[in-house]
Image 1 (cartoon, rainbow, N blue to C red):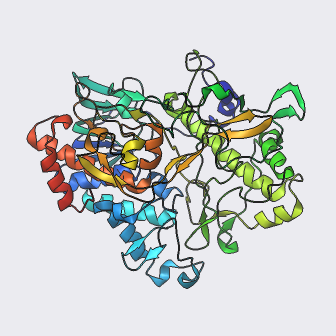
Image 2 (cartoon, one colour; image 1 turned 60 degrees about the vertical axis):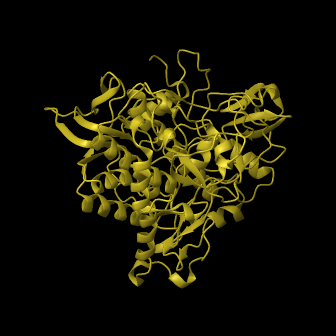
Image 3 (spheres, one colour; image 1 turned 135 degrees about the vertical axis):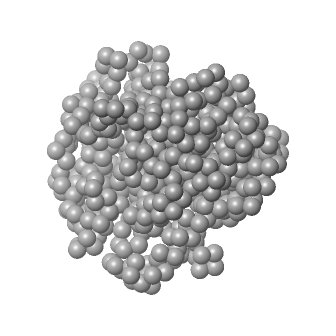
Length: 560
């Protein structure tokens, strides 16, 4: 589509040298009873469980590295309540715990000096035998061992986004990868962060935020820009401070209070979970990115001038003097607004992350990478940053022993939200809160417990100040809630042999709680169990006998 990328034009020219998957001379055909598309933790647990169920399983890996965000820097785990962990999800965190009981696992620091408290759970809990923190390479090692031990075949490739699914009525018979490979199967599991396979199969989905009125919610939709992770007052939104005629800073929108509570097309911000280290012998210095432009960091400099002295990126500790450096504060690692078009959805050149080709996503992910590296470099070197602040940040670099084939940078961009399926049961904040006035979940396939969490969605002008809009942090008090089986299968009358454990049927804000990696592992395992039962009973995924499914889930240690 001509001009489709809009603000990404210069990025394409800069980054199109990134390697893609080459087409094969002779198309290969692979076949398995259960085909899993997506190599994130949710896909790995689905593949391992499929094998445990006695089915041949094939896992399609888009990145060539297993684990998704769990092995791409998200080592400071968002659990909410460890009681939700069961089956393979619990086993993963147990294996991480066992790894760090070994003295040889501690190279850059002593275990005794490592913090005892993680995100709502002990870092290493001797009572439960669970770890809530781990290095990326350790997570990937665990997943690699699981897949090898289960005998799961892994094929590297990416779904052909146009006509990528062969359909026979309401049934997928095969899928096509960009490299020409054809994958045949009886059951398919979409374990991608984007929901590419469900879209290819014609399953109904939504992108963006629903109006609060759609599901009678209060935490969805466009919000007043006064919530957390916001910018300080006094930051001018115009290119030339005080001069509205100069235009707004790049990526800044006007704000209409009349739209509060309304639906929109925008996605919450993405970022990389940077893995940093201050261990000199394991540290790679962060250099000034080739495409660095000072204007890209104007909000950063103005925020510092307005009094911000810290909270530019998190320093959540991981073993061996490493960090899980997520977004924190008003100007941080989240590249707000850089995952959707500034144009309205009805415009011919509109795009969002889910509509982009794999190559375009690769390019955009590169832009996020360069912007975050530029953020750290600026904090360490730029003359508009006070000298004391530069010295404070100078100790951080990239770890030599992580992501060694990717310039020590994480493999996966944190795609916090893509497509969300719309099935016969939509998980909303009412199910997360277990509001008795709304339908209860009676066919649980796993549990969530984390805060209803949305990162900021856009930067706006609000009462003359530059502000962020979209942040929601609504606690559930750590109380586990059940997730419906009907929310991970399409509506009746749609595709009958696909399960969707990640881009499941939920509202934007309910997804904000469900989307945590431990929950993904739980739902990945449950989806594979259901797929195997559907094969054995010769029924569609919508017709799986829940009583039979529940018995097997409990047998495998799942918490329902």
